[in-house]
Image (cartoon, rainbow, N blue to C red; front, side):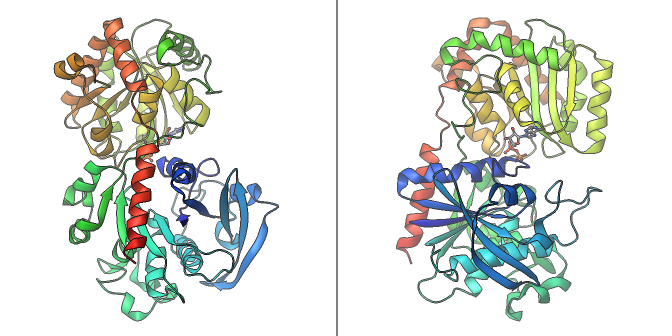
Length: 481
Ligand code: ADP
């Protein structure tokens, strides 16, 4: 089976969040099931550099008004296609925003052109590159299933899956640009790409795809309600029989404490004591006191979604309880400034790195005792999975994928030997402080804590199960064709 995986980011080339990790890991996760996954990405500078010697396999003289060509390469064992359209993608810096932090004004064209090219590929327009199924990820690829449905090409049309990694990002644009998308006028309809009077790219994908998936069973349920569906709950509800919740796995080639080059000391579930060297390294890098008390970490976008405002207001209590915090993140400027202030107020107890640092994120998972993830919503979440794999006990809000992957250390779960973390209900001050205090108390019992760490490290968070679920979803769609 040949699958075209369409996304705007993929580790190790371009990454702004969990989407990239998942898209980067999917080809290897699906290969054992007889699926060849070709990843299709926009030709950002990092990609253009990575495929410098690639072959041009197709040209579009006018792809929604710009010239583009298709480059074919391989990453390891897996095929890669890149849309080389310099007018759209040859821009240094963040991929979605201009140097002032505003979304690029032509994002509508960038990701419509990308999606149109993906649909052309899936409909057999490029000789030698045929696909059974198009798998679109998030709003940037959302128009691809719609173009494919409206222009299926000759022969048996490819099937399509639309995966929602975060329904908060929807690609909603003004209706005025509709005529420039090259779609038939009838497509500007509730049964089409119209979305609250404008144009919705994610909405279009949800409308057009043969199946919808999101990245955890709990989130698949949650997005039927307005609080989580964010405007799309009506459409989600009408398509509920086609929605699948499949949790993300982690890529063992990238996230394994036994082989991780970013760690000061490598270890396994049988040698968690060795994590101490990583803790010392974190203390040194974050100018924290050297001691054995509980060290919390955060590796996150600093946003409202991630509950970072609630965490900020709990910092005095965290320090008063004997905790320390090493935080790596970037995002909301107000939150960045607030955390910087907190570090000044609590020297030796709170250390902050504003920015994005892949290697440091590994060290934090490898040396901190617990990772705080108080998300208001979390489709899947990856940092709790990395925490589990690294013995960095996740302290999470009961939502989405966090609820599906972390087992709270209550008395029953501890007695049964299955607890892997600390789960709090609600993202507000008292719940947050309660979870922090409970973590500090659990950490004081060294043997009990190590059991918690080992349970997490022995949890199967590989792609094995989820790879099988995607493979079955694809196979069912092809059978129904
Ligand atoms: P989201 O995609 O919503 O941001 P996830 O938990 O699914 O959240 O994935 C976040 C990914 O980004 C993880 O791989 C995490 O380690 C990484 N990450 C987030 N912030 C940073 C940062 N400041 N530096 C390095 N890695 C980060």
